Length: 410
Image (cartoon, rainbow, N blue to C red):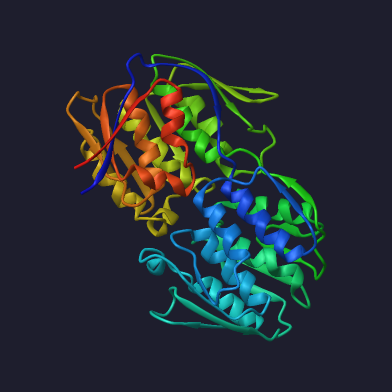
């Protein structure tokens, strides 16, 4: 039996306020840094996302076996945290998590003196972390075109290293805003760093306990942007977002300006209203790969041709997101193809009223990216519970905004 949710909207008109979940990217970084700082830091507005709640539990756990489930930041951040603090732990996760590479991070930590062994296939979890005997090494070269989470994991533990750390980032820097977010949070807790060109330098120093309030999640906001673009009429305020945000997914403001949404920053958040959408667009998602699914689903529904680059990291997410998108847009009459290496083009057709049922591939963002299409016609989405990873109240928030949401098993 597969759980399915059927969604529709009787009027296509969206008006009201939405209290978004807190950013799990900020929350998870803040939790690791607060743990490294010791003392009594106060973290306010921690995300209710499963990834954040999971990390909170694991940081308090005395268990030798640590299950990161399907949470990439939890797996990668804890690998560095346990390694540099010299804790003996076995780190594992879901079947998919154990297919996601971690070799770049492990090799970097081993160079610094961490005892880490693979318990299965080399380069992948599960891991056995045994000890830390600092080598005194300060300079590391790290590939920066795979996952910024590796770099963030190393940066957060860098102040504890005897000689600090100097990272040379090799290749195209993916998701740069997430690295800058990490550095900003480190600074908030008293650790200074310099980021010049492709070099990040972090001296040996102590973190200081601090109070930190987590911002609402711009990734979650992207789905509401998509809904405003597809609505007949819309006036929606998303609460808790900041104009000077550290989150890379704030890029949705500029992306959606071209796809039919006007943003007005208010003291309480952002107000979204409709505007004219372009018919052909091109975007580079290098700094904001988590927005790609939202944009692909929206453009397929709107009949907008889109060219995309910067999608490299999507292959190693909760699922192979490129392949998943290629399959699911076919049902909408669209095609997503890699025309030249690294350059993807989607050619849409006008959406028909044929029945649409979207699979989620155990990926929360697949469910939420395609949900806005319910403003155009009733749709079904399989395994709706996957949203618990980042936005547990997603379906309830849709109902509050006038969507009809029915659950069933088929």
